[in-house]
Image (cartoon, rainbow, N blue to C red; front, side, top):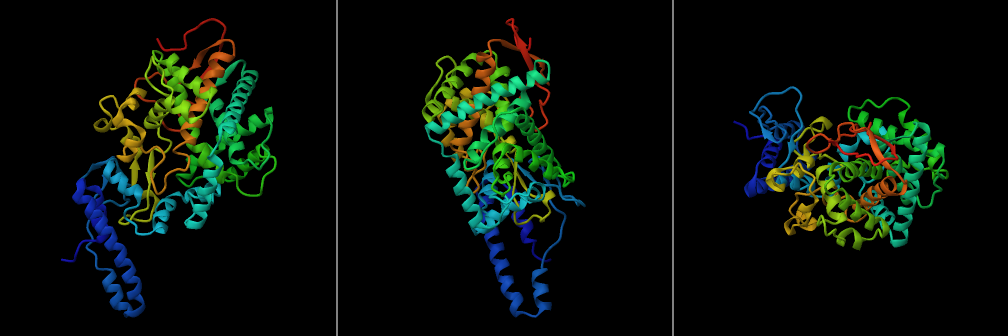
Length: 470
């Protein structure tokens, strides 16, 4: 009998648990790459018939399929299903790129899974390029843009407050007093990040036209993103999106602004929306305590307030609340990698199930599905510790860790949530009642798909009407 297929051996080792499987995984992937390099030399010196015999020496048997993290029996399938891994050990090896010996290969492992974004959005950035120099240049520039001093953070807070106020006024005028919360979040997030990402460009002033263009752009991004997963982006969608962005960036530099907007907007808007719902609506017994924590952050959006200000009544900081939101609602639910042992078909790339990892009761306790920021006050659940253990990965992990993960992303989430809450709950001189709750009060965590809660709407109520479910 011929020896097993080395690709299949690698896959099976990755699926295993424990130290032995991890060692097997590393050894087999290293051996595979050495064999690839060797065959690359052999093809130059051996007769073609001998070379084809050596490189086709495989034992073909049915693929072992794992779906939803569970092993099924061996079965023959016509279309392979993607493997979805939930084990922290395997997820760490997958995201670290342990199957690869070089930086180039590790970069390609990630970015080959993102090629749909090239055709959908025309992206050429660190998430799509396989050129290390281009990737490094993009990441360096991103870190520069996102490194804000105290004055810049205060400017971001002031701009966000203006955006929320204007967005509320605009919606009330066009919808007879009703404010769609999802629209408010999407336009605020998009318009708030643009001056940060394009400091050398002129960003449009707040006008009705700019507000409409921002919402149209946000909707187009969501449609194109969803359609790109099935390669069914409608003709003209990208051109329409770029036209809307020209309204917002009045002095474009000729480059595709989506290279920067997509990573920032996609990372922020859904997590900001869900964090706001949890703080403002879903936890009435802790609501005022949570709001007080965010007010401190908005007043002084620096790291000391974000990390250290702990409300004595609820025992949590702004950082604790944001981390809990990122745990339940990671910006990327599954992270895919093109890995040895798998076909190069995008439908079968193995995935690290970040959402399942973050909600695993074996790791987070019996209340893993509950929004409970106090869990982060425990020493063993400190952010540095959970990242070291590889159980908290809302922004991936090295070598592909998001450059916004450590400081910018958590703090701007807190800032945007705090500003929205402050403007809506305090500075408008009235309370608000929910017109359409869109199911946010159902038991359990909020849905984390992009089309969830798009109908959540509120309106002013001059009387003190409760906004909570009975």
